[in-house]
Image 1 (cartoon, rainbow, N blue to C red):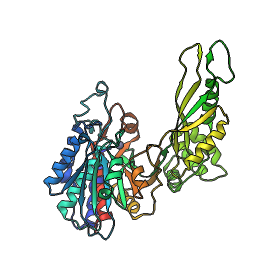
Image 2: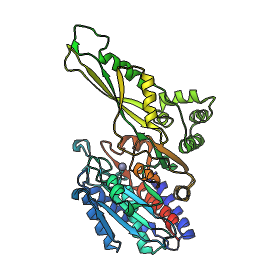
Image 3: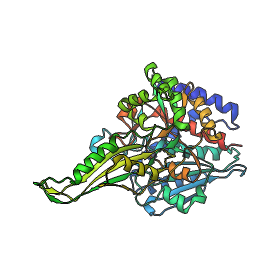
Image 4: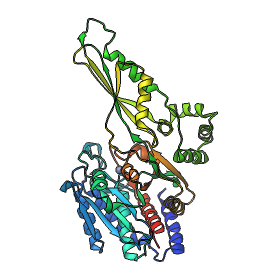
Length: 465
Ligand SMILES: [Zn+2]
């Protein structure tokens, strides 16, 4: 696997850059530098509350090469950093961003120091090695290379290292930047985590570009009744009402609705899947056969089933104070993930109708992310990403994807920035056994270098004169 990826990277890199770029980059020569910055960043423990450690590092590196930086901090320990390379202003800026924070670790689960960036078996091991330090280092290297090569730019390239993506209860990261410093990051396009690439049998077969995400629109179901003694059955026992309501909500098959991203996703997937799977994807796209295909996904591929619709998943129950006490209230939490174009208020009303019980009310939980329309597939940015993917990962199919989770792109899309998700390549086994946020996280060294080259290629194509 490693050998192939390295070879593909070297060949593709030379061709693409010599053909189009004024300043060819010697990618083989850059590897030690890329690795050093990447490992240094993974070695910084930037769990929530310590993001300024990464900002200090980045500031030193960028300013060391003559790129001025600005720091914006609502909390001094959780700063954000912005650097801007000026273009001629003929096009609106391109924002490349990555979050600096990482989720916590349970040290006893790790075979190596989680902040050691240990190199073993062809991998770099460490918290943040996937989420999100590859994007951070790719963006950093792109800024350094733009500056060194003196590439003329049609648009400003803005680098943002942001805090608090994983846990932003204080609103120190993207929320703060969008609210108080939007002029410093406003752009036509943005690129950040939220995509990826799949390695199958030693080669990258698919590159996913994140173009949309669902909106968390959680709600509580609250059942009310009369409190009483457990020895006296009551028809208005809120647990009985809540139980029935949770079942109805959890089993509700909300309407299937494809958008530009998901339709293209399933079309493309049908072209690269096993015959059995391809038949399912094709059936999904035909209203006459969609029901059977949905059933298959519901049972076998719940993540793809969730891409078809606004999903309603009961996740918490709260009721009762004693075995012999009927409480006056019982409560369930629903993790509702709405399609980007869902009318959330109307959806809650529909949910109440499905539950159809006056003893149970639907209480919306305040949304943590704004509604974010899907980014378009036809933009120059998307096309450049598609071309770069095909250059760096020859033979790979490029697929737009809608995340069922949420990311900081929601805030950017809500402000009208067309935003696209990227990520380094992984095998399926690695995604399962060493995922972002998993007990142990690691990235193949052979995935790191082509990923940096991918980011550089996209940025120079979209922003270069
Ligand atoms: Zn992340």
